[in-house]
Image (cartoon, rainbow, N blue to C red; front, top):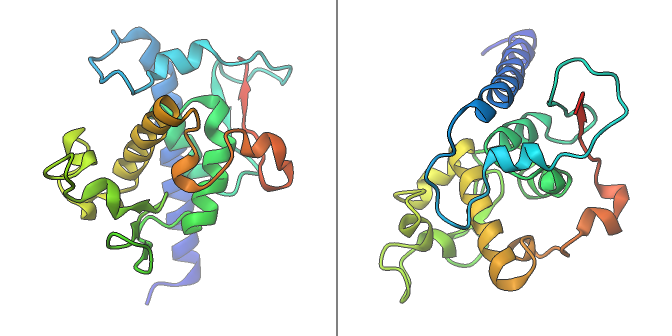
Length: 199
């Protein structure tokens, strides 16, 4: 059985790697040509261009500060993958509420085979239906089965696709998670906004 110190050392190393990867993504992405993406996906470059200016001390341009969030590693990863800055406080709250930041969580009591992973994506999105023979997420080429949703990167990408689909069709990206459109703006006790250092 690994010691408690080893556990925290691994968590610290993993968190450091995620933050470094997010920082590298912020530095490299603007120099890359935009990839070919489906219309509902937001580009990481767009999210950088829409960042509000901050008055914090500049350490590095466009560095995301996630201190004080409930799931800082997840938020930093999601930001580097294209989640819009304005949605990160809600994302942090959703991931904490749904899975306590744990990617392996499965809630079997939900309908359609339960909900999966960090964002507790319901089986409805990854199972065959009359509209999608293999499942909606499969039609978007994001998963091959619901089991893929236990990969945190896949889960966040699938969550972003579902969020964008719901925003385009319902006017509220958070509707699949039963939340108001501007949840954190209305219930600030539950959320903490990240900041961009040196934006």
